[in-house]
Length: 308
Image (tube, rainbow, N blue to C red; front, side, top):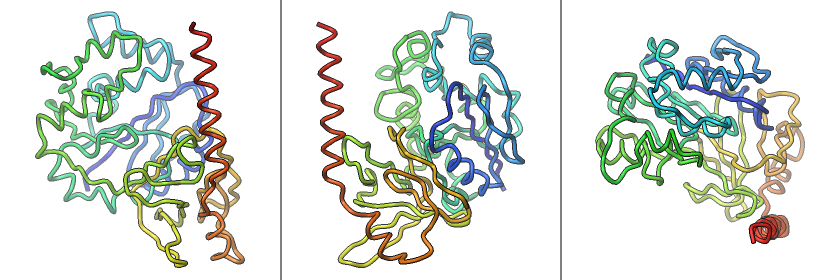
């Protein structure tokens, strides 16, 4: 079995989805998760923790480059993700694949989708930033340095104070450059669910797989997207689900062996009136969607008025 490590430099505050993330990570016991952090992350057999300050991590990054970098806040670390294997080589050199991801996610059975056959055929697994893997070899590890016309230069990404989204697709950064140069080496399947933001829909919509008014069930190491269509419940297995911009989610789980992820909270799987409760949780939430759309618009207008 090919070995995998997912790298998480994380400083400041853990997201409200962290306990859910951790429970699902522990279910994927044959994948390692590597933290560089000042947060209260408890080590486990497959969760490796290196405690340090943000300033100490910044020094590690700066020492790998002969020009002054900009790394003035934790969020800017995202631009350095494509260089993780180069920067942190001593920590990842024994793995077949290295990568990065987000903590506001819940994993399903990763190896069910990212099989050894997939890892043998492709050098890049996804490129959306929520969960991305690259084969651990010299060419891929320093590919971020390759200068190609039409794509963002790593020096520009590492010296610009703005977030350049160098790690993701659609911003002419590392992911787009790899996909443009080596399309045959890219696993481009989308068996995950990137959930709509609150201002787009307070209820969950899977933006990439187009299921609307869904919730998620995690049982064992499996993750399922659930919806009701023509009165009947449908399930679809997912690699992971990503819950961006949902800082208001509450964790109300007492047993992580079987739980639900709903638009407002993470809760225990119901024991009674299951079908009725699932149907209720999948309902369309028009008023809450309008509330967040107007809230976002008001915040934007206030911000614009202060700039005048």
